[in-house]
Amino acid sequence: MSELPPVRGQLLRGEILGPFTWFRVGGPAEVLFLPADESDLADFLTKISPAIPVTILGVGSNLIVRDGGIDGVVIRLAGRQFARVAPMDGARIRAGAGALDSMLAKGAAQAGLAGLEFFTGVPGTVGGALTMNAGCYGRETKDVLVEAQALTRTGERVTLANSDFGFTYRKNALPPGLIFLNATFAGTPDAPDAVLARMAEITARREASQPIREKTGGSTFKNPELASGERLSAWKLVDEAGMRGQRRGGAQVSEKHANFLINTGEASAADIEGLGEDVRAAVRVQSGVELEWEIKRVGRA
Image (cartoon, rainbow, N blue to C red; front, side):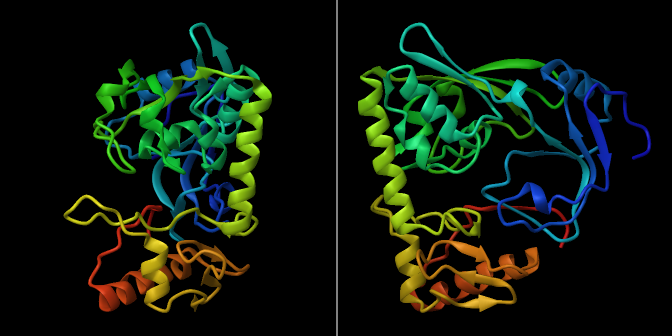
């Protein structure tokens, strides 16, 4: 992949991706592209070969980059130009795809909009929330999204209504290859202090129950669904299988919350993913349930 079009941002070859992820593990990107702005990104996409793989990297909160790194171009929407959060008319707020979910919640609170408080408990960016219908404490992205703008793999800008996403639990039904640019959300008017108070409650609840100060990737496995439509708690299944606190290399199942894996300091990506597979196997034996990864795993082993 020697020939790439000129850009106004940065093209970095062989950049180690571990520092860009919350687990702090992972090998190099063949090429890491940090676009200067939306037009720089669109222009790049129109010019690169469709045969070149493209991977989007947010803040790496719900991600394992494998130790062998990632082939092709990794695109990271870094900088303020992709992270703006601004209120709009009609009890709406727009956020860039690179904005942290917590900043979206804070911006909504400052604008006196309720209903988006749950985003303060979602690790990651708005782009990631759109990709996986992120949510917590009874609310999901689908409940508040109005529309989003994205680029196709060929650089075409498209607008997507909530109904276009086909949201289900922790995923959407959009075709692969879309790169989200921004999204508009709807709230309901409320006093900023009241909204901030509810956000503080969510933060305190997370602090008490999750290892958010550790090198972790958030919830590891999806809560499995029964034929009745009821969802089981993944952490309970992991606990019942005796895997709380179990280790592989430098990776450990959190003692605080059994659906979190943590890097205790010297883990490789293989340690973390391998421990996750150990957990899945133990749960399968104990309860017959096949846990599905919620954390995305990308790259070469």
